[in-house]
Image (tube, rainbow, N blue to C red; front, side, top):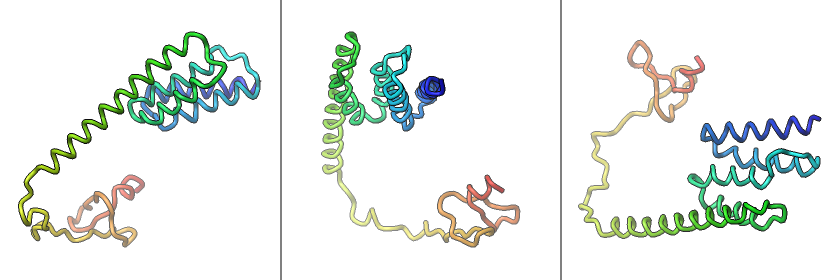
Length: 165
């Protein structure tokens, strides 16, 4: 059926996103698999809880707080396979420990920054680093970001304009 094809396509997309590091799309893909399997009552070969766990494991390093919230909601679900609760609990413990360690290291960094000596006038502009804003020769608008110098040596276009030109 079409629903089976969509569920498998979402699952393969999830695996591909995890492999390529596209962590912003793993959650929507995992939720798509879950929604299709639940709504259509499909006999999917991978338990939905395991699909959601794959997403959480992928995002844990980049978005630990979101991963903790996802683990908490996953632990509250009733259809979690029997072997999953120990995995969920151990991953949640690791994430909570990592978040605490991050808080401690940030507090140490802030304390170190507060104790540094700052010379008077060190934050004032030096005057020699004044750069005229560059204007694109194509759009006649100020270029934000890096610019590409044209052959004449004094005309500029933006990186986006150069890529599309």
